[in-house]
Length: 53
Image 1: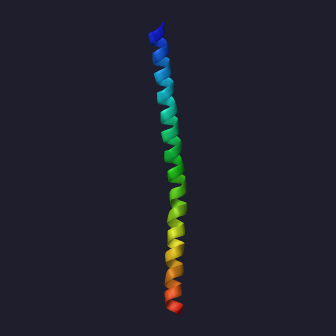
Image 2: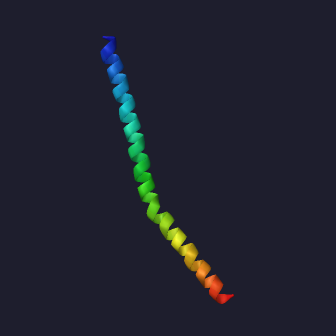
Image 3: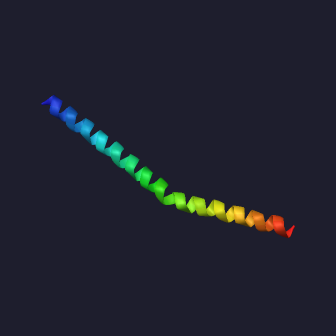
């Protein structure tokens, strides 16, 4: 029946969206510590540069 096909289609869309959101969330969580340490490294480098000049 058409209604079950429509339901299956919307369910598939929902799963795809959920999967994409989850993947994006995991990626942002995984890259966050790297970004933080990079900023930390840059600020430390700046401090050293200020001290030596």
